[in-house]
Length: 245
Ligand code: PGA
Image 1 (cartoon, rainbow, N blue to C red):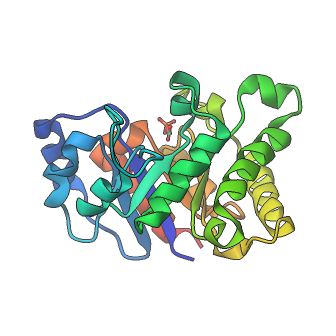
Image 2: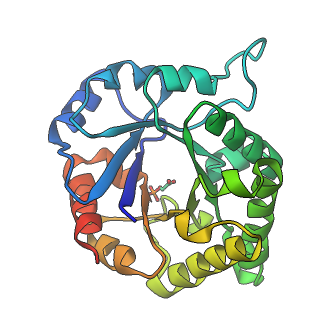
């Protein structure tokens, strides 16, 4: 399975800064490289390095109509997006997105040919209480309930422990392997074609730890926040993904 490295720019960028960043990005053989950009920059990204795949960071669960501020999957498709992040922990925490909403967003994306990157992950309190597995299971179950087994096999999953995001404190390789194997086992146990699902790791991936994380079992790529805004760092992470065996 080709590894996927997706940059999540979050609410960063400007026309000038994006241009500079894009100048540095060269798509590497052996890895799929994507950038998930703020909505207004989808137009700017119509011109981008050859092979760089385009994505967005959120999508409406609704089709069309009176939903002020929302952006539909059809609109993202029209701008050439292939991916859209759904259920990022920042949206769950700051915008009150519940598990079922995340599932409905994933369904809306798939209906328009987009691949949702569904984020799951536990907070530090949940991990310390020994609840990481059950929290992730609950998040996955809601998405499965909405999508059904066949569509579930078409999503990309991203394990993003909340405590590792933007904290400079990545999960360790053994923590990542344990959760990723758990997610794959969960999918299998629920009748989903688990081997078809790419499971990304996200949370303080940097050039220094990328090689070890991508070499970890059941890690099929990464979702990269802060380091995706620094061209050289994002390139180094993508190279590490391409080189990982
Ligand atoms: P980070 O963010 O790489 O800055 O930790 C990852 C994410 O939130 O997707």
